[in-house]
Amino acid sequence: AQSVTQLGSHVSVSEGALVLLRCNYSSSVPPYLFWYVQYPNQGLQLLLKYTTGATLVKGINGFEAEFKKSETSFHLTKPSAHMSDAAEYFCAVSGGGYQKVTFGTGTKLQVIP
Amino acid sequence: DAGVTQSPTHLIKTRGQQVTLRCSPKSGHDTVSWYQQALGQGPQFIFQYYEEEERQRGNFPDRFSGHQFPNYSSELNVNALLLGDSALYLCASSLDGGYNSPLHFGNGTRLTVT
Image (tube, rainbow over all chains, first blue to last red; front, side, top):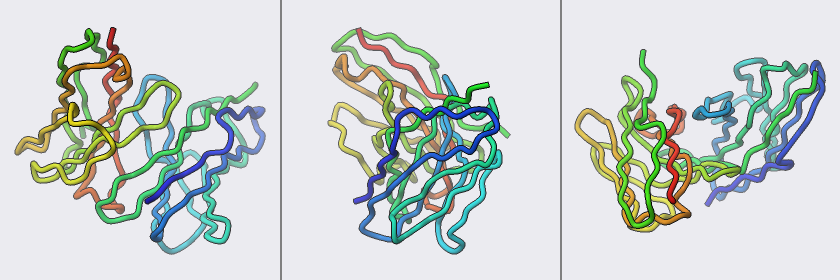
């Protein structure tokens, strides 16, 4: 079985500051990890994914995440926050193949001007 | 290229009633997954359809059922609605349901049960 834990249901950063959203995973098999973003009244949009290979993954809108097996973590970062980054972010895990994708409870990012 | 479309966008039903939600997958996708997202929560997996068969199912009661049509579109049916079924229902499509084909989500159907 797979699960993810997102630390912090709400995160506030100033515009231009570093964004760090934390995610720890649990998986009985090599995990496939994802970050999705959800804007109000919309579905989820894929930011980035880790399957195999390079542990530092770059995504859209300047976001990146690093897979750290020893820490069972997959934290999301962005060097400089923009107002448009305000949204809810979900970390997700899958066991690969045809297995279901399991989502965390989400972190709402607020960007302060 | 049309993405995932869901209908209706909003729905209000009374306890005990039945509801059908519809989803058209992104062009070229053959797998449809349904998720329930309660307010303030992450999406919870309901089930996945591939080749018109339910391939996987989450921890949802039999009141939740679905169907996939030959054109890959899908329906989610919920019988005997409970107040707790109020949520945003998200449809996601992918190619063959594999990990290398990430989920593409629609904007969801907001179901309110009164």
